[in-house]
Amino acid sequence: MIKKRKIKKSVLYFFFFLLLLFIFFLFRSRSYELQYTVDDVLVTERYYKKEKMYQYVFSYQDREYVLNIEGHAFKKKLVKKIEIKSNEQIICLNIEGKLPFYPVCSEDSNLLSYHLVDPELIPETFRKNEEEHVVDSNQYKIYDLNKKTFFIWNYKGFDIISDKKNTNVSLYSKDIYTIPLTIKVGEAILMADYSDTYEFSKFFVIQKNGKVKELVLDSKLSFESYFLGTYKKSAYLMDKKNKKEYEIYPSRLAMRTISKDGMGKIFSQHDFETVTLNSLSTSEKFFTFSSLGEFSIEDDQRLYYKTNGTKVRIANEEVKAIVEQNCEEVYYLVQDELRYYNLSSGEKKVLSSFEWNFNYKNMIYIF
Image 1: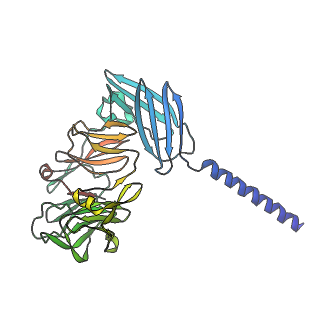
Image 2: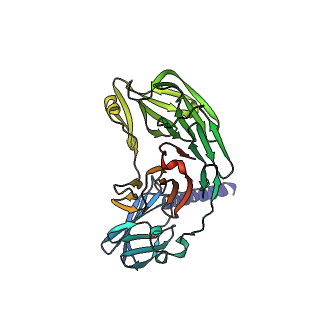
Image 3: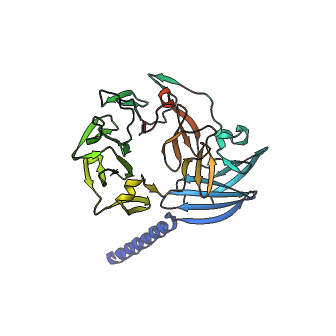
């Protein structure tokens, strides 16, 4: 009897294991592409497993509207309803379904963000509340910090602005107006010591909590250097004068030479590539990463979101710099205002400073 019970338990465990295996293979995420029609609009639905992101292409009246959404759902065919609204030359597709879809719009043959159109063309939940709450703090106007902490260069150090408190970090006794050898790496800012003029022998590592550490170097680096970019927890610097490339680890207060025999490396799309130090010295080259979409300032000085061969106008005003971005959101400067834009929630003001009318490069870092 006991032996039979053991056999039955073994069989039950085996079938339970098979059931779990079946559920795993049924619901595990995988990349796919399919097409279907909703309310006379042809929908192309793509899921990219690596990026954990959906890309939708809506084909309507010989025009393609592209929409990217981060996330994952176990089902497919996630668009359930599309309502078309139009006014003169503007057309908006208001999409409903199993993901946080947002409206996509066009004017004539150009695509534009829904927050630039007549609010009557989009659902009420996407209509912007015009009420603004402004707080004056020293030389800054604070609108909505978006639950972030901002480090702003004040020529002697950094002003730190957050929802909790405003403080500052002092680094120099004299004014330093430009700080090109400064970069954000993970949860810290890496900055060359600008006490000297032509060469430097240490970096400051300014942490998110405002604490400052020093990375003292074994040899001096030339100010004729530039950062190629960051990867994981490291920053990569090219010393053009001495033709050497370095990998810097701010969290470990360490640096190593990675160039050898006249060759260095650069990250391009998916992996590192070997390049000559001459090419890195004669012209500045920067890391590039594969992405489903990116924000860029075009020739008309307007901000656009570029994806799948299309570009969507984000701002009607001239944009002078992109401060930080990822595939779904961007911080950028319009005159003396720092603004934030999210593909789903739209645009809002963050901070403003009169000083940004004159000097703004490498001055704002966001955590």
